[in-house]
Length: 373
Image (cartoon, rainbow, N blue to C red; front, side):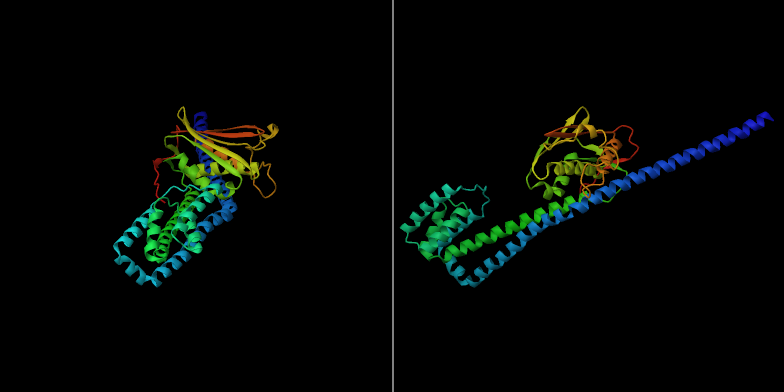
């Protein structure tokens, strides 16, 4: 009888243990899903705050494209209206040669080196004397001097002088419009590259894949993406110094780490109140990649430094933050088997994140990350 009771008790104990294990497994999964949702909510909240700035970032190059397109329209109209001059111009070999040499110089990429006011004044006087000796009109002298200075034309200006002396100023204006067509095309390309850069960063940052899969990723690329997204908040009065050393790839969830960088950099931006310096360092150290984000703001008071990681604790004004930011940051770093520390005094606050290059005992599958967007 006793043996039967023990057997029944043992069987029920096994059932209870299995039930308890299943409940623990379910609760753990629910907690992981809740944390993932919190991370995504914080990311979308951050993105919502930054939308106006991002729109401004895109609007600026869009304005450049619009202005360049209007200029191209004017340049092309001039050339079309003077097409017969172009045909006649091409018949004279010496004139054509000077035109080709001048245009070749104008189309060549040059390092932009702005002259100061004294240098401009001196050069303008020199050009005025040169053109006076060739009996150029005051209007043409003023127009041509500005064109030469603007386009950094040195000794090659003799080709333009030859064109004007042999063909009045028609050849010069054709040359000018041809050069401006090239410049406007370059401006459009530059603006498009800026838009692509911003959109690419935005797409990468707002990546909605909540997969638990870790991948082999470049921490610096993620940091650069974050800085692009935050650029509109940073560029007015805040200097960013980047000390990026060569580092190995890290096994991580890059989208979650981007949220870490966003929260830490935004904290520095808000602490600086529009004026100051943020220094970001990334370097290898004893099997880790270390990221340090330092600002020269007022610092975090010693009495609350231990509480900043608590959920919903915030020192910001109402509407500036939920208080979830640093709690989520700590959770993400620890999920990556890493460590985050704070060292803060007035004039110097440093958040240091240490991430193992290859975290041990990862329960997630590691796969190569597709870099294409």
